[in-house]
Image 1 (cartoon, helix red, strand yellow):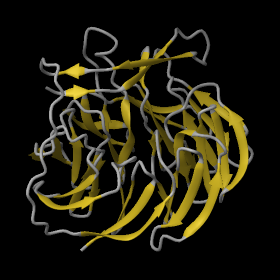
Image 2: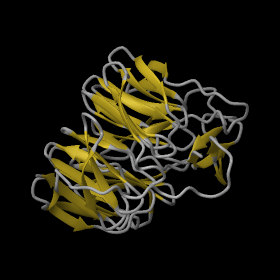
Image 3: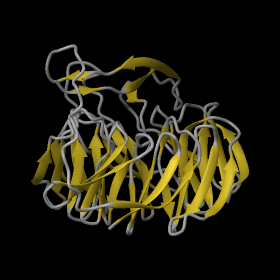
Image 4: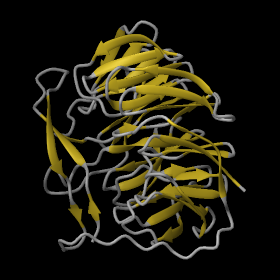
Length: 385
């Protein structure tokens, strides 16, 4: 049995550019086989590690509950706790660069370009920082759970109704809004795609990847990444799942419960697509793309053409995180506090590291350092022997 659960939001008919949200507590369950009992997680395999991870440094920031990304830029990593504390550290040494407080619990965090940072509170306030000092606050018209993007002295946010807004990072002035017409009536209450490629803003709009002019909000390309199938709104739900894996001029992304695809960003064209029903983001580098399906079976594809390199089914139902490709290794966390290290060339397990809690965000590879953060709010900088 394959089980995928995701929180949903249902949107009312749009009478203007701003949609009114009705938050639903419904849970989506996609079943590949019948049965009511919850499958047992696969047992840990016996292992004689050939790769050992050591802690370069670690810091406890505060518990994390919600959609978080680790913002890594210019040798700094920025993270945030549930209660609104935002902290930036030097990746190489773990030295604290700055610290700030939003003054409220967060729903989306954290975006940062190294100097400026932005988060969204439960009261739908967008809060911008300059090296830890609060610059401004702006009440948003809708709920936000995807971390803001800070780039080019602008802050970009994407609401759960998929609308995108841009603000001046220095003074909070609203610049523009974009929302693709004819959107789907349901959306995932999950982190979506909003990132930058050169001078283009990339945003997910259901199963479509849209490239926007960051100065005006006008459309540069609109690409269908996956075609939803099904007989009802739930079965056809197919939002792009963030964070997107950027690799030079290409990006790879999961479409929820549908497929994994890689996109050529200069032309705004689809390079390849492979079916895989999953809910977590994918990891990628120039050689391979890795993702887990709804039963936590890992698949690695060749980045150039999507051919399968290897599959691993020894982590089934261990509630895997999004993976990361780290040099010649693939790393992925599970719901039992373990970080697993696999050989990139064939998927065999070569190492394992026990954390203090499951991961709260996708791992981030930064040169020889791997950055991970747990739900308890412990930020680890790890090295491999």
